[in-house]
Length: 239
Image (cartoon, rainbow, N blue to C red; front, side, top):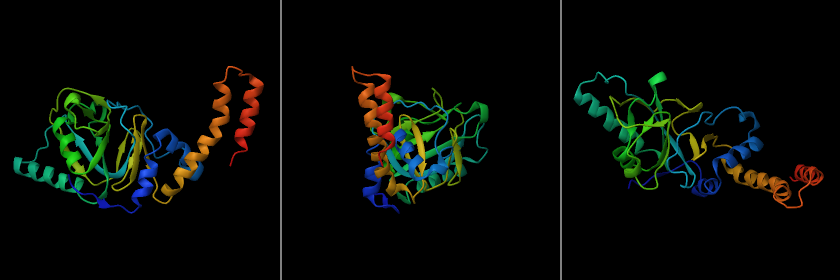
């Protein structure tokens, strides 16, 4: 496996972020970056065939694909572009997450770029998983421990090919630039600004402490509306 380069954030920060699921990271973002409550995360549902895998945290490798028409490039140029794309995926700061936009419009997902081969290749190149609005296939043969969030699951790759790479993409409502820090799990994905990343674990713990009194009474056999109101008041005083 390719050795990932050291990213701009300490590995300990990425490890700490990986201890929380993506909804909790989004909750924490509301505390440390409230201006991002409406942006920076997936807003449309994606298929996750591996919901039991832990959250992944890594730097984006972006690309666009299409499948409803052939690339139009000569075979040699197509091969060169694919190799250049793999070179891009396998270099730079890491660990990495592939973020791929399908630009076939209403036919997005017509052909699968992702399957047994590309999941294995990307894993070997240092990627932890993929977030795409395109389709995936070969689920039983998928690379072990390689996470996938996709627009759909389908059987064929049709004319799928990489159109561009390294540019800003938009997947399921989330805009992503190359090297953006991504947190993803079965729920979806979120872009984490580098300047707030180190603050998120503490904010996530605060969210948990605020939820505890409410959850305790909600799960209690002695639950009453009055006790819920008291718990919510206690929760609001936790800082």
